[in-house]
Image (tube, rainbow, N blue to C red; front, side, top):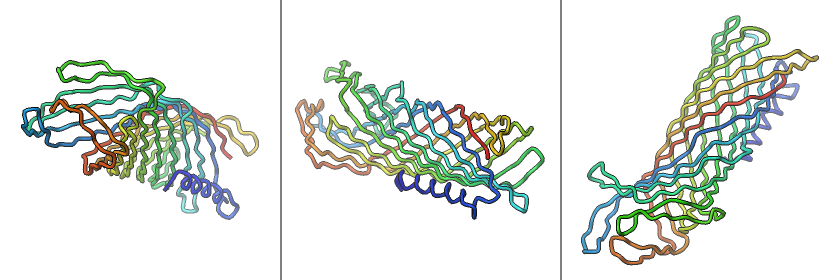
Length: 339
């Protein structure tokens, strides 16, 4: 499901709850917010194969690569909540939310490469680069909650939700080092304005969890939540300089923890403004396999044979071990109105 379709579903839900037939008895809250997001998303691939040395010997060797993409950025967006107390005394709550970035990361993208011996734990790093990053970030969320226990100032609720995240990275230039044939490290740099890599990752996360609410007074409300869910992830990677693409589909698990508070101000008619603060931590891990395919010829120097070799366009490798991890910590403040 693409972002536009999900946005239309969220918008349709908002409009539906706003109609007299469905909106009767609901209290609404709208809260624009700005958040500072920190963290990273990374992926690691490993493949093992046979290599022919200059003496004609065949050896088994492994190659491991890890790419780390920064997620430190300022995000803006907001939530809309529809809250209703049923005749049985249970509270139901629907939340629609959206976040997008307005700044690029200050940190860089890091690319690491190792040789390793499949029969031991030994490895040797042979390449490292870092690059400037441009980020496009979109998060859409939908949650539905119902209280299971209510007190005069406290409430425990269970909720289910769906998070859709799309992250796009344009990687510009590179600087780093690579081990040469003589075993020495040599610096290498590229034009910082040259687009060298494009990476896109999509996360679809259905989750379930619990939320605890505390309302000490009519002016304040605090909430904390814990949730987990099954992560479905898809990745697309274009190594522009090498002329190859890589795609992966993975599945795994995610954990979400968060808290927020609201301070309500003086009511103006039916509208009550408030200020809000939010904190969230999200960790996601998934694994699967990657497929790489060259769309143009790539010529390189083979240090084992001492000769130039070419990987022709159309070459395809499948079943490459693939693991991805995402960690995000975000906090910020906003304003809103309840009506």
